[in-house]
Image: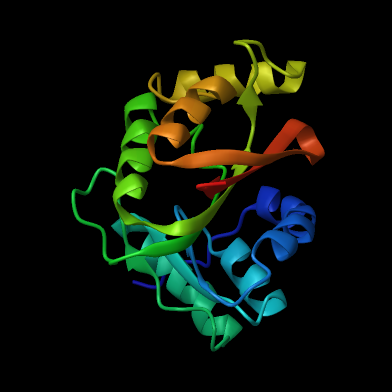
Length: 200
């Protein structure tokens, strides 16, 4: 059965402003592991515009076929074949990670899954690893906009364990993985882009 190539309008809207920041963060040649590549629109855009990077898409098994469709069409030498990865897996398909990118994933995950993500990263991150996280966050337990409040309600109606996470909780998980906040960038549509470094 032929599946349609997946598409996210949100990815189209945010890929350019995200690129503006990550091109300065991931400025040196390395392999960037993308956690939860989704449709692979980000992977294709960033790999095309950051040719000094090897971009490693990952996602759960059910999303890999769609990622392959985008990768096959893009024909980019630095866009690696997608790997199956669930953050709850005890073993990840790698030995070491020096750069991580994830977008619009933490609010889809439960708090337990987010903690597991950082627990696993703590075991795999290299000594000077960098991580970029894009998405909405609450600060001091409060929404940053009415649209985020509505979005959070929609998320919880769809899956009670999901929802916008508190920035402070994410920082606790990150610190346990040896990551420190380097920058917190305001982004369009009431999103943020957090830059974390190991041993910053």
